[in-house]
Length: 227
Image 1 (cartoon, one colour):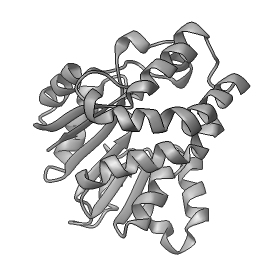
Image 2 (cartoon, one colour):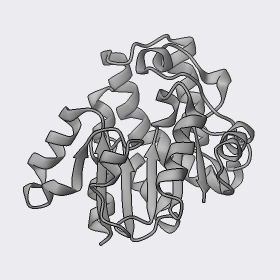
Image 3 (cartoon, rainbow, N blue to C red):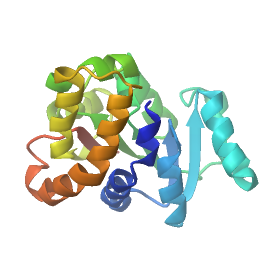
């Protein structure tokens, strides 16, 4: 992941405003990355938990939040041992931000979540549109990108019932196409970092204004909510 992503303030503020009405009061984020959503969710007064198979990610969150270190769990959420570290009733929402595309068998993974957390709402951000798949996706370890239809199909095959599925960040889809497919930028290159910073400063405000008209058409991401 390019470090410039962590500094995309406009993007994450907009993303959180979009997701906030969809989240419960007790959120477990699976795959928290740089911790951008941790900061925004915690500031909103919600309970926040995180789990990741990458010890470095968990150690970084623990070092930033030593008083709540027990809320950051290292391990595989699909295992009983990790789930048992969460007290009954401590979570009402599972949040996956650009995680599912890294899982080869996405249906089996979601089935395990449904079995382990049968009463929780699932909120996911997924990379959208297979036509955008390019060098950046390959370097990031993405197996696929989704459409609204394939996201709904994947949820149904996993035992989830979709509540909302919509596209997010229309103009971002165009900038991803330009960066990944046309320019062929590498994930950690300076060109990608500059593109991310330019996008956050100038493109995100435009995409935000278009959002009410583009949610059903296309976007850089798919937002899926299910139970």
